[in-house]
Amino acid sequence: MRSRELGQATGRASSPFGRGEDGEGMSQLERTRVERLLFVGRRSKAACVILGIGALMVILYSSVFKLLMVHEAVDHSWATAVYWTITTMSTLGYGDITFTTDPGRLFSLCVLLSGVVYMLVLLPFFVIQYVVTPWLDRRRAARTPRKVPATLRDHVLLVGSDAVTQAFAARAERSQVAAVVILEDPALAGELHDQGRQVIVGPLDSAMTYRNAGASRARLVISTLSDTANTNVAFTVRQAAAQVPVAVTASKPVSVDVLDLAGADHVLELGAVLGREMASRVLGSTGRFHAIGSFGSTLIAEAAARGTSLVGLTLGEALPLLRSRVRILAIMRKGRLRAMTPDLRITDGTVLVLAGQAADLAQYDEQFQSAEISEEPVVILGGGRVGRSASRALSDEGIPNTIVEMLPGRVENSYSVLEGTASYAMVAGDAADQRVLRRAGLENASAVLVTPRDDDLNVYLTLFCRRLRPELQVVSRATYERNVATLYRAGADSVLSYATTGATDLWNHAGLSHRVLVAEGNELFLVPRPASLVRRSVRDDEVRRRTGCHIVAVLDEEGTLGYDTESIPSAPGQLLLLGDRHAERRFRQVYLGRRRLRR
Image 1 (tube, rainbow, N blue to C red):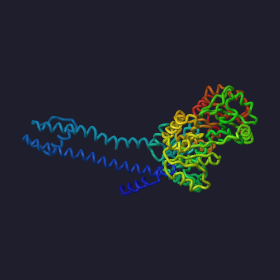
Image 2 (cartoon, rainbow, N blue to C red):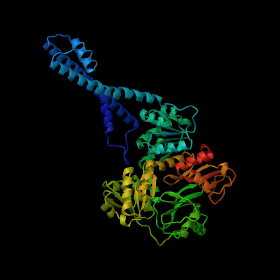
Image 3 (cartoon, rainbow, N blue to C red):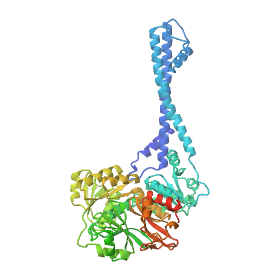
Image 4 (cartoon, helix red, strand yellow):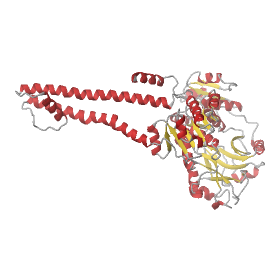
C-alpha cells in the first residue's frame, strides 16, 4: 500500500509543471507528503542494510571463532561464540576467553577493528540520522503553534514563505503590525518561529487552518503561491471567513479571471507590474515625467534631468526657474538620495522626485521636455514575464526596444496569445555573449533592462554591460532584497526587487499606510507628526543626520498633502518621509518610540 502511494506521489512530483517563472508547481501539501514518504522509505532501507550487516558480521565471526577454537582443541557453545564476538566487537574484551595461537590472535584483531567501524561509525550514524534527528524535528514542530490567540485582531495572514511574504513580514515587524505566516512544513515553521516570526502550522487546503489563524478577524489574507494553489487557498479562505479580503499573486494573465471567480479581491500580476516599473525607470532624453504613485490628488513622479536645461545648474539656481507649482521632493543619483542643499549640482544622471497636481506636472513637461530629441532604443535582457511587460510598456510610449532571449520562440509564443501585441525586435542568444549584445544594438542603446529572475545572473549581466559601456543606463531586477546593494555595486543605476514591489503593493492594499516606491530601498511613507518636530523646517537637516529620513511634505487632518509647506505646523496631521527601511526604523525609535502605524 505504501509503495503504491509513494509511486503516485513521486509521479506527481515528476509532472511537467515545475515551479518556474511561467509554470506552476505542485502544492506545498503535495511536496510535504512526497518528502515524508521518501524519507520513510530511505529510513526503512537504511535500517535493513545496517542491521543486516551487523547480523551477518556476528554470524560470520561466531562461526570462524568455533573453527579456530576446535583447532586449539577447545570446544565452545554457539552462545559462547556469539558472546565472545559481541564483546570483542564492542571493545569490552573481558579476557575470559582468549586465543593462544597466532591465527586466533590475528582473527581477534580483525573482529576488533571491524567492530570499531561498525559500532562507532555506522550504528551511531543510523541512530542520529534516522532516530534522534526526526525526534528533535517532531519536538520542534510540536513547539510551533497551531492556533493564534483569540484576542488577536486586525492582523495580516501570509500564506507560504517566499521573497514577497518575507519582505512583507519584515515591514510589518518594523511597523509593529501583526502578521501571521501560515505554513504546512513544520520544520520551516519552526525555523521562522525561532527567528521571532508569528507562525502557525496547518494544511493550506483546510478551512480549519484559517479558522485557527483567526481569518474572520484578520485585516487581509495574502497568498503568493502558484496560480493553482492560490485558487485553492482563495476558495478555502472563503469557506472559513466569507468577508475577509483576499489578495493573491498571479503568474499568468489568463489566471486573473479564475482567481477572481475563486473569491480573490485583489489579484497582483507581479511580473507585469515589475516590468512596467522597470520600464518607467529608464532615463529618457526628453526630460518628461512619469508618475510612480499618488497621495490623494497629488501625484508623485520622477523626471530625468538628462536632456533638459536643468543640467549644470545648482538646486538653488533651478528652483526659481520652475514656472509651475511642482515641488522637488528629492534628488537621486544611482538610486541614492542626495542632500537637498542649494549648492547641489544637477547632472546628466540626476533624477528629480516631483510632487504636484496633474496640471502642474503637465506644465513642467511643457517647460522642460524637448520635442526635438527622440528616445533612443532600449535593450531588454530576458524574455520572461518581466521582460515582455517592460517591452510592452516601452512600445506603448513609442520607444524602440530589443529583447535578448536564449530560448527560441519563448517571446513569440507568449505574445501570440495576447491581444494587442507589442512592437519589438527579437535577438536569440546568450545575453552574456558580447556578439549577441552587439546584434541587439547595445552600442546604440540608451539603456539596458536586466530582467532574469536569477539574482546571480543579474549581477553578472549588470557588471558585464557596465564594462562594455560605462555611460549606459542600467536598470536591474533583484528577486531578493538582500541582493539590491550588490547590484548597485555591480554598476546598476536603478534596482527594483520582486520582493519589495510585491510587498509594497500588498501593503497599500491592506490599508496599513500608503507607500510609494521611489527606488529600491527608498520609499515615501506616512508617519504621525511628532510633537518634538513642530515648527521645525521641512528641510531641517537634523532629522536626516539622526535618522537618515528626509521630511518631504506635511499632511493636514483631512489628508491633503501640503507639499508647498515650509515648516511643520502644530495642528494634528502626518509627515511624508522618504528613506529606506533602516532610516524608517531609526525615525520611529527616535521620534515615535516605535509607535504603531495609524490606519
